[in-house]
Length: 582
Figure 1 (cartoon, rainbow, N blue to C red):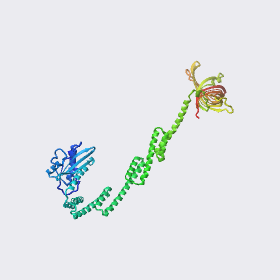
Figure 2: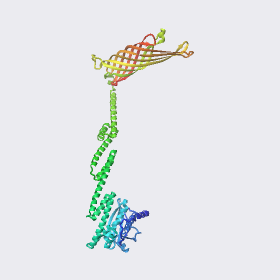
Figure 3: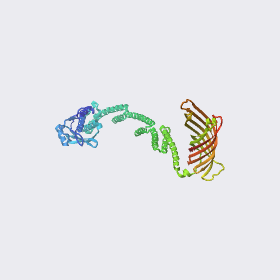
Figure 4: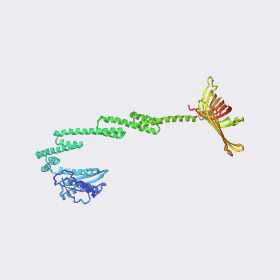
């Protein structure tokens, strides 16, 4: 605390009052009593600051308080008078420091020792941010009161005039006129005219300097002070117009800068900052039409952003229809904004996907709903065309080249497995009425392509030696069938003429394992064509599904490696499933 007091005392050594001659007014400043949660050091700090200001003013003489080192307490009027008479003081200053709520307050009382009366009772509010200035105001109030009470002399006024203290000269002239009305009018008028002329010029010079530095309010205040002192001076009045014009230029320039800033913020999408700038312009009282136009733009931009935020929320909630409505409203205001277009594109994609998913969902839901006994086994289905994949189990007869050339039995039967792809097509037979509403007669055409094969190994004896025989057959076949079908409920039964053609490759190998290094390999390639009959049976559990079994028996003609043509039987059994794509 001592360091704080020392620092404040050094800061206060700068004289805040104009220099003038020392007076003979003697005062005692009693220590301020601390009350209501105020620490003693805080009250002592206020006392020292006020005392320093009074001393630096050089307008009063501060006498030591004999009780200063005792407990701080507020003096009564009687005790103050006794103290003042004891040390020959003119005034005694006493008071208290208190905190009420969040405010610090200092209560000051000034007692006139000669009249034995309180001449000042005032409460001052102190802010921590302006501690020095507020205590200086208290000291000025005390000094102004004392100067108003003491008797002013012509010689004192003359002294102010001689040192050029025009402000104090005018103040003392006014006090002298109040204390001694009607006296010394001639000299007072002379002094007042001189002081007023010089002080007005000082205020006018201050106004010009303030204007050069852009302090328009201070320039106006200083000029008003000059005009008040010399109201008939045209130069001062004309300069007032200069200040007004410069101020208007400054305001216009400042408004233009703020407007450009608001436009830039709008372009950058910083809408709230742009709104704050326009609010500042409106509080300044600006009437420029650009503000209204920017307000309209800002309102539209904020509405667009609001709709954009709503659209994003709807989008995240999967409410795509509502999101589209909101984003369309935003794009109506700003159709070229990239963010808006991107969101609309995402909404389009989501709606398209959702539509497709709904179609699939409805399709599968309908399938599930159709899985009942009536639909599966009783309800009549319209026969469309179906694409089928079948597992084929076929019995083939092919040329055995060895037996054929030796005149032996060349026919051998082998079972080959393969994969078949087929298409069923159905047409209503013309001129033939349906025998019953649950039965229909139609013409069925079937196209198919078959790939099958066989690999076989066998062990045997050749010239009393063990050997290994192997056989590989590959078969490629394309064919078709046409004939009538009967559609009864969910079932289709038909028979017709089958035609087939294709290619068969047979490879036979015989390798001796013991005692011989011989190896024999024979390849047989045949082109084949056949005709026969076939039948089919299908079950249609749904409008788009088919389960079928198909049988064909063909008489084949084969041409290839052997010089003689051979006729063979070819039986094919196919079991598979199908699907209608359209």
